[in-house]
Image 1 (cartoon, one colour):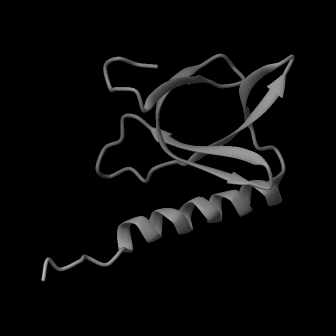
Image 2 (image 1 turned 180 degrees about the vertical axis):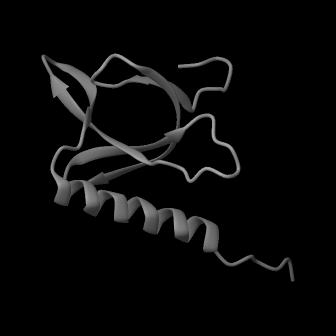
Length: 97
């Protein structure tokens, strides 16, 4: 993880060996699988955030991040994350009355 940005930032490597820094924005569990959502660490105000969803898999007793290759699974999990983010940002303000 990058010390420059803090503990919510990780460097991910794609299939071609390219490294890019991402911010972890949310984690959820669905059907016994844990999914993590990331956005690129460096975004300009004009850019639309690309959301990268990975899941935790176990391989040889070690937990690894893996891509979600099934399109239906990917879309379903993306929609769950987006609903959670909307709830977070659309939550009503509470008065101190």
